[in-house]
Image (cartoon, rainbow, N blue to C red):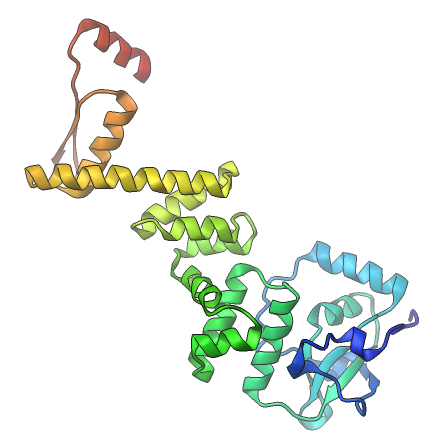
Length: 287
C-alpha cells in the first residue's frame, strides 16, 4: 500500500471554521481497518460520480491521503463515519486495508446528522436536492427551526428557505437537478410558474435544449402574461381559463383569431382568416 502521507498539521487538515468537527490536540490520527468503518446513516450525499471517485483514487494513490476521515466509536469495536466518505470509497477502490482517521469518543444522532451536513455544505459537496433534503431532515427529524438550521450551516435563513422550496418541484424536475442538467437558477425560475405541469414541461425542455437561466425566466414571464390575458378573456365570456390560455397561445403563433370547441374527449380548432392572402399565409405556415 502506498504511504498515506499526512503532510500537514491537523489545523490545516480540518478547517477551524468547522467548529463541531474541531479536533482536540489529544486526538491523534489512527490507522483504522476499512472493514471496521460503517457509513454515516445521516450522510446527506447520495450521488457519488464514478469519474470523480476515480480521479480522487488516482490522486490518493500518488500523494497519499492528506486529510484523515472523521469517525465516532460505535458498538462491537466498530466505528461510524462522520465525514470523508469519498476518501473512504476511493481507498476501498484501491484495495487498501486501512485509512488514517481521527476518532471522536461519542456523538448523538443529531450531532452525526449536523456534522455530516455541515461538512458537506461548507465544502460545496452536495447538489441542490441533497442540500434541500438534508435541511428538511434537520427540520423534521430533530425539530430544528429554519433559523437554527441556517445558523448551524452558516447560511442565511432565506437561503435555507429557498433551498427547501426545491422539494416542491415535480419529481421529474428534481431528477434533472440531481443529475446536473438544471442548476439552482433554473429551479428558482421554474418555481415561479403557476402549476406543476408547467414546471415539468418547461424544465424538461430547458434541460434537453440547454437553455440559460435567463431563457427560462423569459419563458416563465411570457406564460404569466399569456395566462393573465387568458383569465381576463375567460372572465369576460365565462369560459375555461386553460382553454383560453391555449387559444391565446395559438392566436400568437398563427397571428389570427383561434377558437377551441370542446366536444367530449376531443373537439375542434376553429382558425379564422379574413382574406385570400391571409388564407395563403396560414396554409404556408401550417404546411
